Length: 378
Image 1 (cartoon, rainbow, N blue to C red):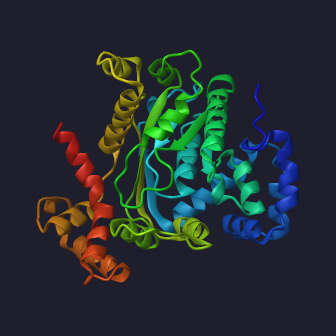
Image 2: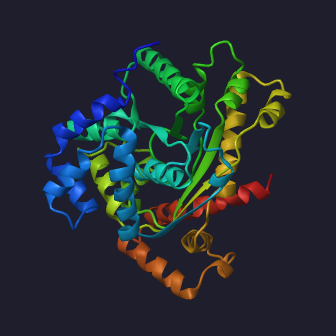
Image 3: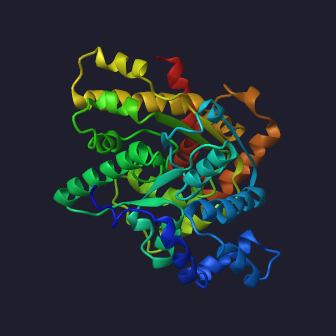
């Protein structure tokens, strides 16, 4: 077996030592005090140091952290579609990507609630440059996607990543989560990047691509936040892109997004697991005698359609669409009170006298409506 040490998460035998090393780190202490607000830190340490595996750390600590985040910053998490999955099976979950940490945390929280295999989850190495963040990610069964490499290095690391995912899914029986694209969707327009699927297929060996995708049991997941707590933080990049200007992240931008994503108000949240992509789905693609790239494009379309179909639309999405189009097409889906509340949200976050800024902000919330409407046009 290839050596995956540079990208893998901790083995269970490494967990307790890592906790011992980082339990006094100020940010870890803050996380633990947030999770256990009524306990002395010495008591918290005792609980944490009973963890001798990732499963124990995730279920005794991180599950409670996510529970606290939901209680303090949301109006509740609902889900559907997970009850049709088999608790003895591993799956490749691919979802839209809005929040750096929360997306995968909520999926694992939901999988645990349904007694399903929790995931190993991909994370960009650019997000874990600080040693305590690297340790925390490895404790949460994150594996690294290496960024900022030369084309030759990228090819080698992509093959290793693909082989690791295959190993986890087919040899270890471990589910895997990956976002449908590199980086979060900033404008609300969720699309699966073919490059993600191309990387995934690199480890297919002699198997046909579509047969391999059938073998790893791909489950598209739609994550719908009523309000994006990082919407304002995403605006500079959205505007730069629309004005065709180069955008450079500030030093702590990703870390600030992680914190705001966790602690900012999200309203209601819904997770929906779509149907597993089956041999019948891929047979439809195969009979068209397409090139490999066109096959990947069709698989990406399958995933996108599943996410659009299962995406929960909130009043804010319908209001944004109607404001964007200057219509009342979806007025039945929201009240005047909800509309006024959303308009106040807009005025606090963007310069409403700047047409490009206003249009960009509205699109963030309207694009999921537009994407769902596109299903009716097919």
